[in-house]
Image (cartoon, rainbow, N blue to C red; front, top):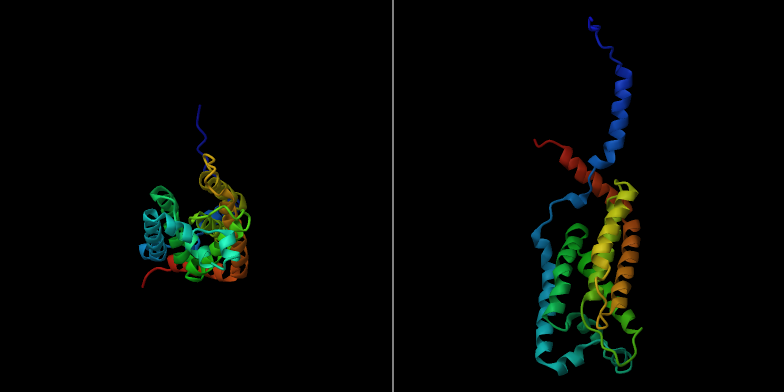
Length: 242
């Protein structure tokens, strides 16, 4: 049997239509944001400064129980005895080395990310203000015989800021993909693997909520700036060097 050797018929119009559809489908995947910019280790410095300060204060408190009691957050001492410094000092004091390392292991890199990509207005300025507000709000929910120490609420503020700002800046990605990434982060980082009566989970989630709300508002206010930065970054990558 003789094979059909007739030349194949090309349909340039249909091929171009398919190519255009493929390009439209793949376009979100090819685009990037300024969050793809290579991170500089120097951006870790502000977070490291905070960690060093918290380490020094914690070390002194480990050697002196009376000092720890005088620096711990306590709603009666703050409001009735006008010891407002406790709002700040209680964030720096940690129960032990394990408590300190558990917080700083994540606090330093997330502080660095916020500082590098969003500047000093985000960290340390806004983040610290939210951390202090979180500490104060959380203290207000406890009775006067409860002391609160640690940077966990502050850390969760950073988580909330990063998640909300990530969602805003990566707007070129499909919403489902962004939500799935946030969900994955939340399941791994925000859901405790075990419950301890000595951990203030309410402080965690007050901080998380504060960070999320502030990040959403900040991202909405600066949405045009973020889009311009994305366009400039993508344009710089696509422009060949002279």
